[in-house]
Every structure is written in C-alpha cells, then in structure tokens.
Length: 287
Image (cartoon, one colour):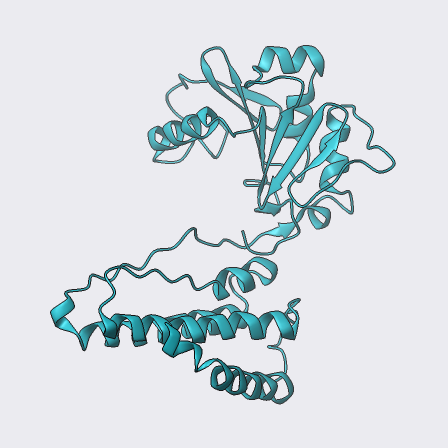
C-alpha cells in the first residue's frame, strides 16, 4: 500500500483535469436536474475510488490474504438525484471499470487462489421528498402534529434525530423510527394509544405516509389508510399492498423481525405505498 501512496499526486492531477473537462465541456442531460453535489465532493469520491482501485490491485499482486474495498460513488450520487439520472449510470460504469481492473489483477496471480465477491448494501428506487408530497409541510411537523406535540421553537436537532417532548424522531430515507423516550423497552400499541389517542390512524391517513407499524402483545400491527391489520391475516386480498403481494409469508416474517430488533422504533413509519409512490423523509430522490 505504501507504493500506491506514491501515486497520490498523479491520481489527483489526472482526476482534476478530467473532471474540469467534464464540468465545463458538458451540459446537464435534458429533463434532469443538475447534480446537487459540489465539485469538491465529486472529486473526493472519484479520487478515493481511483486510489483504492490502484492500491487493491497492487496488494493483490503482493498476495495479501484478504482485501476489502468500498466504492461509494453510486450511493452518494443516486440518493440525491434518483437512480435514473445519467450521472448515476456514469458512476456505475466507473465502478464496473474498477472491478474489472481488480479482476484482471487477480487473474494475473492464479497462485494466490483469490475469490472475488461483489456485494451491495441495498438497491435504489425513485422517491420524492416528503415536503413535495405533502404540499410543503415538513416531515417533523407532520409527525409531531399527529402526536399532538407542538414543535418547540428550537427543538433539539442533530444529524440523527429530532427531539420534542418525550418523542425522538430518527428519519432514515423512506422510513422514520419514532421512540417514546420515557420508556426503556418497546412500547406496545395500547400504551401508545393511551398516551396519544388515535395517533397511529392519523399517521396512516397522511397523504405522504404509506405504512405505520407498531406492536401489540401478539406481535405486528400495520396501519394502512386508517385500517389496522394484525396477523393472522384473512385469506385473499387485505386492501394493504404490503400484504397483498405473492410473497406475503416472507413479508410478514421480515417485518416481524424488523420490529423485534432492539433498535427499532416504538412506531415505524414508511413512505412506501403512498399515492405519489415512495416518499423520502430526508429529501432524497433515490431511496
């Protein structure tokens, strides 16, 4: 890896020239918004990818027993602009080239008998920001309003959560975990409803919210458009798109496992299955 560090100036100069040419020599694709990512950040993403590719290829030739590299370009671009933007496919092609270069390095040293695994942390689906789907209302105002909690003039806010009253909201793309902070363990539906009557139904009727998940003593409760569904579900259609899929059994098991996680919220709100499609609670166009 020390040898690859000697390539830092060369990699930096090469990428700076290439990206300046792209910056001033191309116009945005018709029908697509310009990238809301600074030139500096895009340069850093490309620089890290180029340096990582060169470094891993050199380490492969040296026979290091285990190597791991993470290419973040697709994720960083697809979240803000959506998976159909031309810039996203450019990032995919760059990642493909890096993988091909590493694969070629592996084939040149068959004596080390490397296995190559290509993994992804998640896919991408087009989404729209909550404020766009709600007519300008912020996600925090809508969620706190359903609980009847007025936002403080300056509620405690951080990158990972919003606090108001005894609630903590933690948005994560197309979902929000809501915690009742006065309770050390998962809070069941009956307690939530006793403290905030009708809140789960109100949340589920909001135009920019698709599904609302909670727990009762028997397990999963899903609110959709004001209706609460609880396993065991009846045969045939339920009226809820989450459960009217052909893989209903897998969905039920997966959602129940999600709610069983210690870190899961007391209420989990999803932006999927709204009339506008998938809604992001953090302003993303790719989720």
